[in-house]
Length: 174
Image 1 (tube, rainbow, N blue to C red):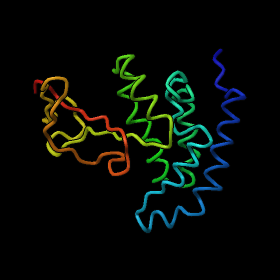
Image 2 (tube, helix red, strand yellow):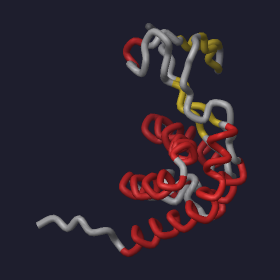
Image 3 (cartoon, one colour):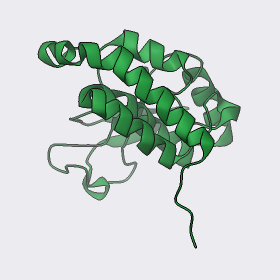
Image 4 (cartoon, rainbow, N blue to C red):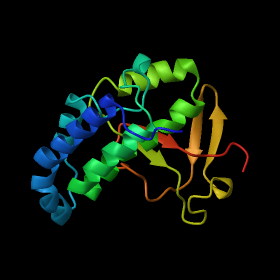
């Protein structure tokens, strides 16, 4: 029989995030929504409790937690404010392509630097004519020496205006 109960660590982390959300986010959630404003203060405080980069392996500066943990955190954050939950969850969304497809050298360079502070990552996939269909994107990446030149237009970029690291989906051969 499968045991679906949470571990003691998961229960403690869920409580930590729930308490954080009710103390730090809920009191200003309405104001943030009304003003359509991002709160770097909340991002800083979430970083301070060690969970902003929860999904990143410890060797790169994250907490090394899993997807279930993220679901528990998202539920607690979302109970306080859906917008803030989307911002904090969008950080993990933006970091996931690096974790899945990044070389060990790239991960060490980018993830370690990113996770050293209260920084957010962005996820740049959606395009006007393609939506979120990766096979239909038109943004191109042309290699020029040691760099890529990216041409295209993205929309609905999670954390787009506040990120310091961007996962941009582009094709070398559309």
